[in-house]
Length: 273
Image (tube, rainbow, N blue to C red; front, top):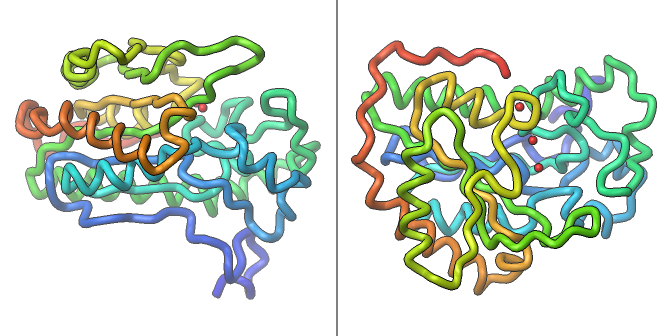
């Protein structure tokens, strides 16, 4: 299909996004920016071993399966991005030094060394932009139809980074609008065994995030970015448990937020692990 063109993606490479469910239904739209660790064939695995790509540096372990189960429980559409964050990070602004990294958590990424501007642009054009364009078109359609939208972005984080243990089981991130994060936090904290972080282990920022600033904040949409510790969702049981917990807290929010007025919050350009 694409193999006849001089571009990056060839026949047999995954499409740059996957959509599950109708994006013109329900009260939620779910995103998973780091759902997979695929690498385009032309990049020869970025010079890495398969086991390195499958580490936390290559993708958000467990996040896609939690997102799929949560989408079922909420009866919500889900948009996933299957390429490794090491190819291009779809939750970083293109201007960020972390958009395409040369090292990650001490691991060198040979396929990203001394990259020409044209190569970086090709990755953006064939992976980053199609994913975010689809999110934008889904939100535009929902606005035209008068559908309320709570944007939920699913991520996961490694239990230890740079030798420092991270005690949180889950982190809820927000910045301009904390209503959804606060409501979900109240639900999760009913389980006294959960260690919850508010804007932990990360905080939203224009240099370290893209999806929430671009698609939620700029449109005035209620939102929450959810980070779950990877050891808790590394297997099916954990993924099911956390999807159920999140659904319990999110379902009551379905009709809680007012509609965004038609024509409000146009998309523009703005970006994170």
